[in-house]
Amino acid sequence: MALNRFAADDPDLADRIGRALDEDGCCVVVDAAPPETMDAIADELSAHRERASVGASDFEGHATRRTGAPLPRSATFRSIARHAAVLAGGDHVLGHATTWRFSAAEYIEIGPGERAQRLHRDAWKYDQVDFGFEVELNGMWAVTDFTEANGATRILPGSHRWAHDARPNPTAIPAAEAIPAEMAKGSLLLYTGLVFHGGGPNTTDGWRKGLSLQHAVGWLTQSTNQFLECPPADVADWPDELLRFVGYAKTGNGLGYWRDSEDPLSAVHPDRDFPTGWATIRTS
Ligand SMILES: O=C(O)CCC(=O)C(=O)O
Ligand SMILES: [Fe+2]
Image (cartoon, rainbow, N blue to C red; front, side, top):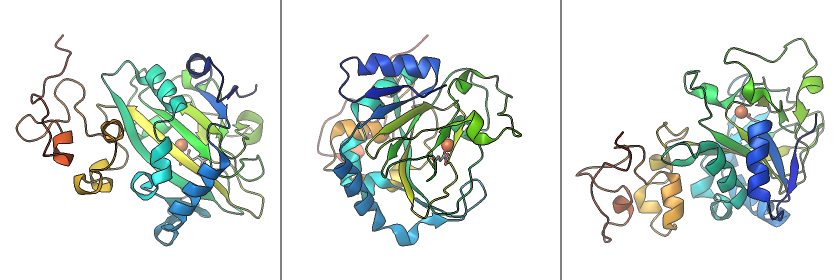
């Protein structure tokens, strides 16, 4: 089994992504952003390296550095947060909800000697509730080249269709079961919340750097608290569409408003007029 790979300029990219996410739960968009964009993100985030979390748990890794809040910390990441491939994947997988949105992103640097992360489903974060459908569309930007040797994310295509209590065979050699998502710097792995995957072991003496993305339906709690990471006073010059994506939006039927049935975007732009009312569209 191989990973589906599509060129970023494929005229049928959105359809191809949709079909691959249905069938395999994952795909790679090759060269989705220029390598210089990845270098700029790495530079902007390395300024926060001293505060990064390292060795927090077996699951988070003992030789893995995790730097959070890339949206407020990296203007370059903000410029690709709503990449066409992300929007195509999110609209396809999460379009059943009134809205879907950004949930978190984390810069994950896997260091020399790191062992393989346990294969898991990201959607387990919601108390392992069996929704019976996808609630997340996630991703991984290759900020350096991803190789099998340096810890490319391993992924099990098709495992999004496994039963709720199914688990990958723990006695199989992981590499024989899960495919390393090898990809060049600037490529993007997309995968759904139900696909088993995990960081690979790094047997090289270099660092594997990736920017992990999470998006979820609007009625779920976001993984990181966007209103603490991106408070109104800090984001007034961000485009409306990015602010809506971050969570300054009503969703569902009566979620996300504030104060006197107000639109949350009015907290960022008190000088602008927004319609009030918490009810949205679905009443039956
Ligand atoms: O670093 C990776 O390749 C994957 C990380 C991951 O899946 C996670 O932390 O949930
Ligand atoms: Fe994960």
